[in-house]
Length: 497
Image 1: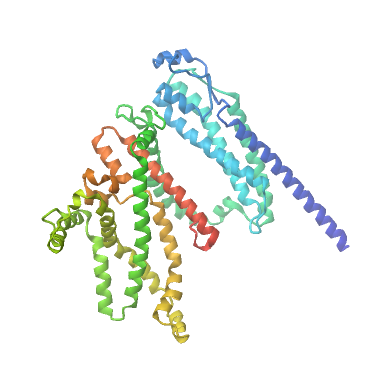
Image 2 (image 1 turned 90 degrees about the vertical axis):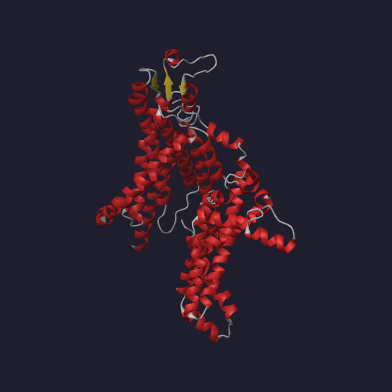
């Protein structure tokens, strides 16, 4: 009897696995087809009246060829050639929706091919990629249809743009694939007793209501301003505004590349590496020193004196640096002259400035970071140190084997946060110390100071500044993801995500 029951359960399980594998195979095939239909050689938009459009926008078809069909990955090229800025921003959003859907479909396909169910939630993680990729494909295809009928034709030249049958096929396939993935996910949810997101919302709706203000705050202050990224791809003018200015593609980025982008990037990264590395080491060092001070009044005084430079404004720092280094009248210059008989013209000698900038950065910021590490040290249980003393460990051994290892999580978290801004130079520090002294630019110029000079000396340069900011953000994102991946491979507990 038990054997018959076991055989029946085995047959049922095999049927379930067979249905799941069939569903996954169908989903994989549909996703692969969506990817093919979204590639640049598959036209989503057709142009029916090229000559009329060219006449309206005074386009010489001999010099600017216009093709009869475009995909959403190539349509921005049409916008750039025709200088029809009114078409740019929606096409820009749809372009990124298609790119994002292609990336997620690729990840989803790879995961389906090498599918390995996890013990905790089976294939739910893979199905999440499937849902996200198909939802983005739906948004991209439906958005393209809306864009053609209710934006492009009504705003430019009625009847010029026609949706290709391909875009409707992608929409139908994405909807069908989403239904299949949801069905597969539903079976997996039952198997692993997971009630899903919407059931979670129903059960804990009060907690989600409390999240609404936070969501609104980040939406208004963090996500909606991201539309300003479009500045980087336009030749902005106040007459047309952000959304109607001519789309120029990567011309703003080409300007940055021609303007010694590599030296600027090198300086920015190298300075930040020194700031992050040396800064954290010195912050830990001073935090340990202060924590070991036994006299209470001396401990508080030391902590205050180390922390005080953080409150010195960069304008005051500029005055201090000038008073120290100014030729013939500066305190340090006079002191060196009296001791060696030779004055140093610091403001005309670039080689001294990397060291000077690092020194004053450490002097100003070391106290702030020290407080974070000192708080961590104060949170370490005294039982560890008492046990170490019983075992005969001296003060240096206690620091080496107890304090430093327990500071490691704090160090890694601060490191990840700092690396996220590795392409963001300390503009105030560099600008106030160096100013407009072109002699020092080779060793002291960073992206932020360069962008400031460009935006204050060239009219209508918002596109250049935004391009530089976007370059910094993308570079920083890649560095953070790679660093987090390396840390996660070594010790997942210390990773941010």
